[in-house]
Length: 488
Image (cartoon, rainbow, N blue to C red; front, side, top):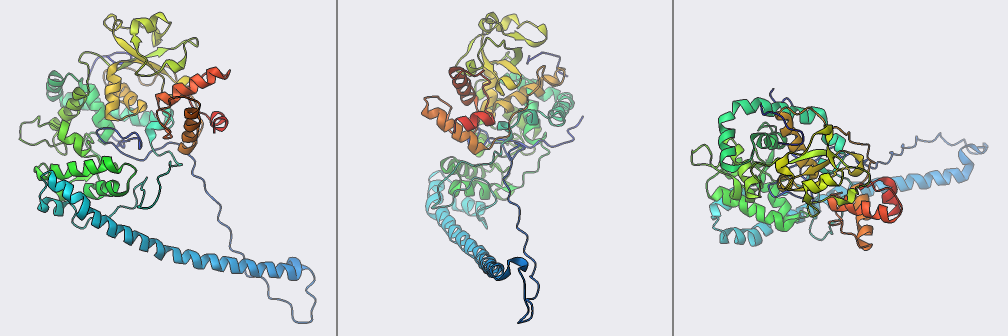
């Protein structure tokens, strides 16, 4: 049972891009750029001045047109500066290309002298390694790259939908199609889903919601050469150590014959197959459920569904419990009580005055079990009491909105009406770098924000609430433009 209950039962018309927070990369993988409404600063292009009129004949008075002689001197100087700028700009492209060429040679040397010895130690053959990196060069189009000699910086622009506007993330055309697609597939794959739940304890709607959210039930086209992408990120990504581990795992997958190097495609985050597993997660959690001797998460629906459920089971899914309930939180209860480390018995939350929406009671079997307050937009959106299973969903993708999306879509497959009882309020448009600056200020004041990464996770939200309360403001537990300005 989810937030409101129901009975478990359209094809998905729109592929829902899998989304993973950079800086909060999930264990399994995920993807990609998003619709966070961050403004991108832009400068208007200066108009190139028209050629001035021909100067008057010698001996004729020019008067004071266009500033006279002084204006003409300024115009000549302006022309000179513009010409110089154009010449300098023209020289930048070859220089940049030369820099790329130097770094490309460094990358090829790194493959031979650094990555290959590690792969050989792991049992990868020279044949497998050579096939994987045949004609592979760096992918300069990827975000968050740190070329050799440069220092990493916090990205100004927020790219991840999971940490953007909640209202955008729960756009009805997106979540509605995942729910509808899941209902249709629930009937089609009933026997497989029942067998998966019996073995791993994870309900069919949850598995279907993840499958739909990640790759549109397998419809997503994975366009990236996995070894180019993983190799680029291992060589000059923000998280080199993590992606070195992942590219070595990808080599192991090929070495063991699960898939050919040339056909291993990935998302823009390096995740594989219909469940979007990072290579190391594939090795740990992918299963052969159709009995053909392969763990085929690229083409086999039974293997895909079972692998998702196995992943959740391995991270602690509690059989027989749902993910959580939408609730009413009185103003007397601080939003700073949120978080997986501040759990209480659900009966205790109820005794404090928290109620399920719609006048429903919490199921009696849940009252003695632990629950956690979860307010992904602080006081600017709906609130929830969630179970430990909610945080298991976050092991799949470390975002509160992602886990909530999966839970809500699963509930809809069981007949729960669309939408939450409380709407998502309007939130200010902020740069990721703005939030990171605010987090650094809060850290200096002694607050635990979970790291100054520009993502407003639960530790940042409750730190905001605590600071607001201590400074005489009504706690909202969510960043806004005024707060960012105050705490910069």
